[in-house]
Length: 321
Ligand code: 13P
Ligand code: SF4
Image 1 (cartoon, rainbow, N blue to C red):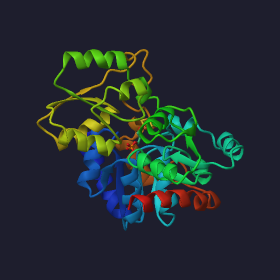
Image 2 (cartoon, rainbow, N blue to C red):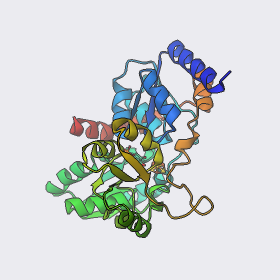
Image 3 (cartoon, helix red, strand yellow):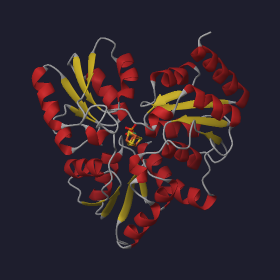
Image 4 (tube, protein in one colour):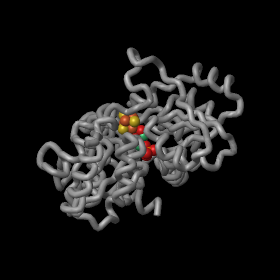
């Protein structure tokens, strides 16, 4: 018997039994995205994942992504049980912005409005005035800048630099990076572009500025999928996690897609265009989470932190609405 089929059937039965829904990020592996679609869940970017989970009538959300996505779901839906295939699926941006250091930094600039990327811990969100995802960051910073706010930005240094460049806002910026996007290389990308003069280049703004400069479209995962559809080019060079190809190929089946070059080969590259934490979301782990729940799978956010973190998150959702 096909082990994958058995697992999928088990997961489907557990989803029904628990009145649970599977919410997956575009960077999870194709079989996870397919299962989320097949079972009435959703596959999306981090903003839509938060929205979908909050609006859904399920008792349990199973979030296939990384920890901050599960935490965001729990913050917005405290009445729901939020499970993750593994609580060890971290994010280098979250890890690169410890709450105590960040709080001290904010405290030393009390006249600043604190804007944090969704890729942060609940405790960091609790210290923020605004949370943003990559699909809404530009609009929110532009809005705050036009109102004259002094801004602290954390934690992604490349996204921060990109936002500054696009909006003209000057921000105090934290300097963490995504280990996946930080690996894309401008020099090699230029060469690939030269070999493929008819191709369009699509870049997630967590990439270095030199890579963003070469882009025909820059945006969040969902914005890049849209750009893939609307750009006239038949060939696309894509600088983001390769998990995105599943949906991108579905959205434009006739186009040819290639990965943008990363810094090294398997031996030297830390991530090689696939997030090692996203890759932890396998079928076995999903089955185990739904079957066993408990300490190793259930997201908990203490109530004081949750209430504080909910304010900047709701602010973002209301701004986006
Ligand atoms: P998106 O909000 O664009 O989906 O990005 C989330 C993420 O983790 C990118 O690395
Ligand atoms: Fe974090 Fe980068 Fe992985 Fe996204 S791809 S979850 S930003 S480490």
